[in-house]
Amino acid sequence: MNAAAGGTGLFGAVVVVRDLARSERFYRELLELRVDVSSTDAVLLSAPTGDRLVLRALSDAPQVSGAIGPLILVWTVDSASDLDRAAGVLRSGGALVSRSAEHGWEILEGRDPDDIRVIVIFRADPSVAVSSLPPRVYEY
Image (cartoon, rainbow, N blue to C red; front, side, top):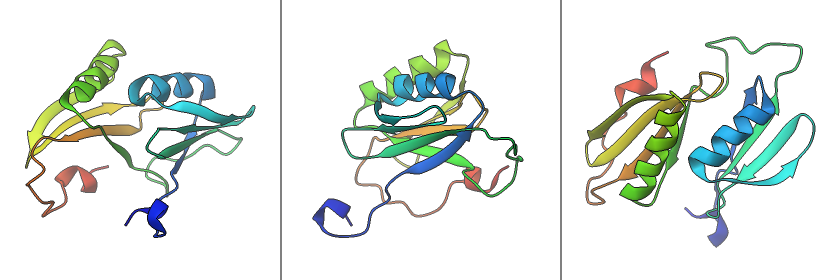
């Protein structure tokens, strides 16, 4: 349901990062996000669609791998050319892990500057329904 239509929607995700400026550059370039709000220890990035990502600078308590928090960030793009552009960004930064086609989806998998898994997907065949969770959801 679309939140703009009065329903429930996800505001965004909050991710703890080691280097705020480095991660901001990465996500702005990869996903073409704009900066809406910025402070010395956090930045709110958003897309024209209303999707949001908050990056929070690491405090004195380091985040432990496998702890509660985002395991994978998954983003969608509107076209194959958008996916190609994102692949180029990941490839140029040495962050592209794989590119595959699965069940009507084109899938890029990469890593952000803090080694968080980032997946960018394009629904190449809109007639294919999501019928199962991909195995990567269960991987650590």
